[in-house]
Length: 234
Image (tube, rainbow, N blue to C red):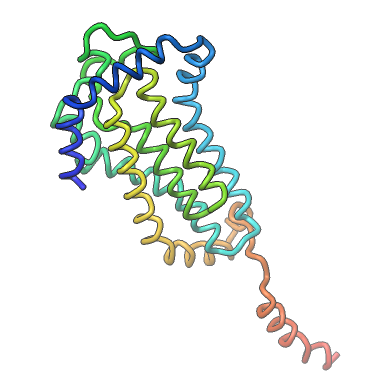
């Protein structure tokens, strides 16, 4: 994956300037309400994902252990994906190594909706895209219906970074690639131990936070069979 990201970073500014100009010129001429929506939406989209994770946790409180485990692993996996990207040169490290300047500073005579980040805040890849794509991937695994609806939202969050003028298109593509690859690997690797942990923790005072799993028919039948001799003896 490192090689693919490096190739994107090296080729992006050369091939992406024209696309960036086209998008920012169109954005500058778009209605004021759309510009405001793009500027607000680039941050608000992340908050929507946070709200979806909270909603998923609430929903999982009355579901089986695996559902609660995946609900908890989703945001954890997103955080780990961002940390991996920042720590192991998959995001911040590549930024510091390649020093890809923000297009709003590198390309002359462009008008952007958002204020250009400070010098030293490198462009490649987009961390907003990492978070959005990772969140959508986590939701696809743990809550399929909402996850499929979250995918377009992740794409909008990523593209909004180009629309407001702070990233090239290849920056957001690389961020999305990181998110959709790293997060599912982490979730699937931790699903079994996570389910076991939820099962154990639901037998502690943390059950008030994690909820209780629904009683299966087999479990109810076994409990009834165990209680029947006691009733007969009475």
